[in-house]
Image 1: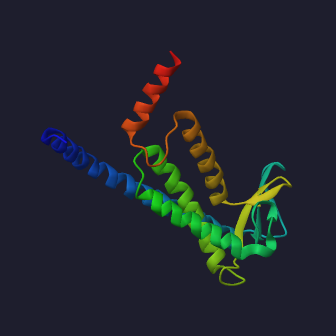
Image 2: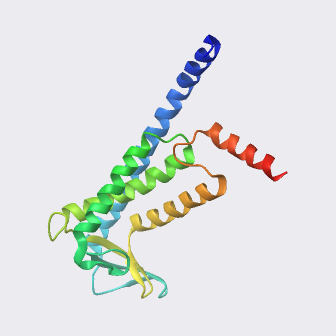
Image 3: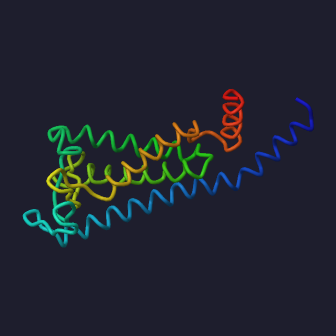
Length: 193
């Protein structure tokens, strides 16, 4: 390695240091915001809504109704709450790991949002009744007669779809730097012509 390249490399690292710190901090801030909004809306739902009565918002299509879900979507796996607790904790931990590796703003948003939603669900699973690692998730957004969900569910679905789109559309991953994705795009464009 030439001295000029070593200096350029160290300068690049310094130049990306503050940006990377902001991405990591932003990822955690967004995750924390998702936890606050999700837990805040759940607290509101518990204080305001009933498990017996649905309040229509958009006719029969969308309404508000309190529910405690021991399983996953559509109450799947009701007897395996501890498994969902482990999955939620693992997803939250994975988000923390990826938060420190993120190099692109769009991935910081996806990881922060999904990580916050996973952390919020992990909190429900670990600390809500009926007991540790057997807690039920608070749901209150009733989608017709299909299922009842919460804010974290929406964030997880939107984040998963966005992450899949990012991987399929531009081939990027959370650890790609902006320059590596641009390089991939220019190489792919050269192959097509």
